[in-house]
Length: 154
Image (cartoon, rainbow, N blue to C red; front, side):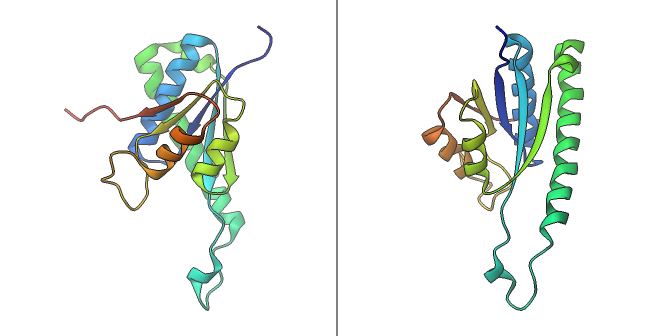
């Protein structure tokens, strides 16, 4: 098989997204896939800022890029502990995309073998059983979707 298969994973820095990245890496090792970690940065809503200008988009994108790399690096380190050194051979790309999380993930996963998301993220309704992004992905993705919960703290 000359084409690499891609597992897309949503990253937002939450414990749930850390677990999702580890799951994506685990599957990538088992199947020989590559991982594409997506961080969505919603465009600024000008109306929210009233008389003040919205935060500089370039700064928000740069901060998201740094955060995404930190999450993925930590997840790879944990996955190496769990699965061994072959995890380090998995090709991983981090991408920061301008848009809402659900839209960005659905677009990125159009040709993916799997889309992996945390069961809830950093949104306002943290007590939800399944977050709105996860639900949108489950309902609308063109590929199988895995919703991951973090391991319980002992």
